[in-house]
Length: 328
Image (cartoon, rainbow, N blue to C red):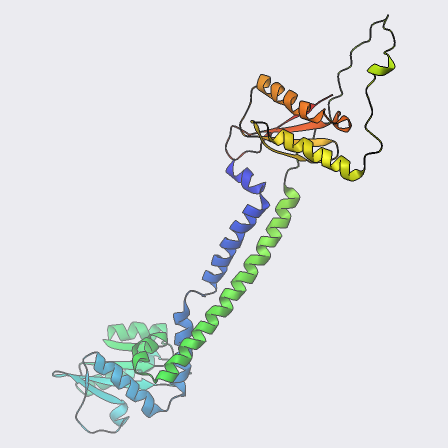
């Protein structure tokens, strides 16, 4: 029943689609994961640095982890590795690679492992702007070599990057997020409008039954013509359209004043739509119709008004039950 009610309410269905499409599009487009775009922008900055500036960032990040640069004066690149760090009596070789197209390969991992054996080092670290190949990651894990590469590298060195460069990366990430959220909002709006239009076309139409003919009673055979004084008077032809409209409005106000009536409005020139507060039995409904007709029959032009009485449905969420009546 809930699904049927939703389909019959295009605005409700379009709101649900609007919310679902917005959050779905934003999630799959990465609008809520700005860390990736920030890291991508940060890596561009790292790759554009000179090697000396880049190696100093790596040194600061390693110091924060408890490693200290070796006191031995040695030029970078001597003996096949860039930096030498110590922790207590342990020695670690460090390779610094800031070339964007220089992926960490299994060959470079193997060569660094050979150097650790030759230098009697306890381990090694590769810090690279580029990503590491799966084979290199597997071999590094087996050889006790740590690889800090790609987005993970930015997370390590971000605190020591110059303030303006860090702000540039964060601004790029926020710009990406705004673009994705705007695209999600546009896609959600288009989807909601399309669903609203489709649901409105497929919405079931309530068939209005034809008005019941007024009951006719057979005249007695010996009936005599009614005197002219007893004939029903026709509406005053001298009434202006404004006066007729005022009479119709007065009749509606009287109907609305009835205790069981929730709303009353003219749905057409000859049909008065009457909404009720609660359900009624057949006898109560007939009594209410009599009271409504009493308010309408004060005006001769309204004597053939058709009543569309809407009784609230006992099932929550369902459309009201329509009962058709006629004053004459």
